Image (cartoon, rainbow, N blue to C red; front, side, top):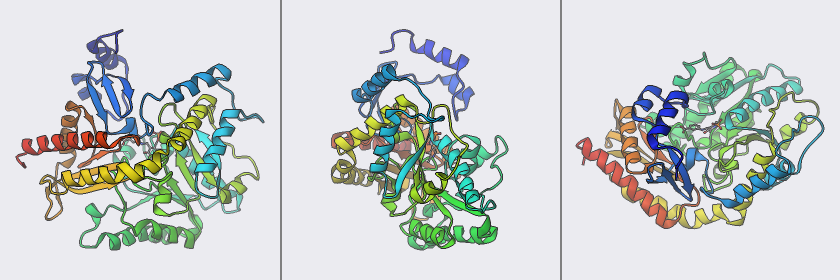
Length: 455
Ligand code: PXG
């Protein structure tokens, strides 16, 4: 495994020089980072030789699993042939053309164009500039405001974090930027009160209509949302929500943007989360599963209706590495793997129903948890004080972090978000791996419930 340094040496160097994202550095360095050295399939290994089940697909991205030689070969071949060239000044290259062609094959009808970035955050920054440029090109420069949602996650750049609805991010760096406003998230368990999920889904969607009328439709450019909120805690909207959002966007003629960074490339059991919900966005932000995380690449899939306007002139936007040939070659091979191995169809016909059943059998009647939820390869539950009244813990966030630490000690990677425990394993998880995953999760939640005197 890691032979050049001992774990302690890696940890000391890490503490001395590396600022981690979204981390309490003081706490982290007191305990030392876990050093991950290898991955294969759904598993990871640390520098002490421990084998972990990766219930987070890296960071919602390693959809085809670790250790894919085809992807390493694609990168190696492309690095030798043409490691870099730009696409700014009347040039292109085969990997970016091939990937664009492939994306228009797998994307929903009408999505025949793609703009490349290096990440989801840059994708959403691109979206902000693109929708404003679109409306300005149509002679409506005042249509600038983008409506987003509280507790949505759209990235960490200034644009991405502004679109996102995370207070604790807005507090750092004076965000959101002007022209971005937030409405309620469709989170029935927390906000639904006495309404049925279906009634509440309509109510939450109609917040969009209220906001459009309040701002004046002549000032509103677009609405953006994740089909299923990922980082916000795997929040699966009621079935009535997205159709009503679609109706409102259609009625008022504003653009609908689906942030597919997590939902895209199979996570929901469809190529895109928009397809699961039957919605027709104008733009879709993509990243993560596009390359299964093997190299950084993201982008914006653009519907013909918007592309035909953008194609009439310059869009003064782009990154040195937009459509980087090596990242593009790896992403194209990743899509071919998803196609060749029928990974999405296989999930749906086999592992998804089985794993959902296991998850519900393990947790539906568990005394510490409620709002047990599954969709495609999303698995989540909420730690609750009293499930009969949907009463949540006042210190739920802190409890979930303690629960996550128990999982980590037991070699299961799960995330804690607020008072939810969430998981999104690689899409290649087999039935027997699903059994192992759910029994590990159950063992950890039981251990925590015993610690709290709830079992
Ligand atoms: N949109 C969505 C829906 C995301 O989930 C981004 C955009 C930004 O992508 P980049 O590639 O710029 O990170 C994301 C990223 C978490 C976590 O804690 C989630 C993300 C990133 C980091 C942490 O769940 N999602």
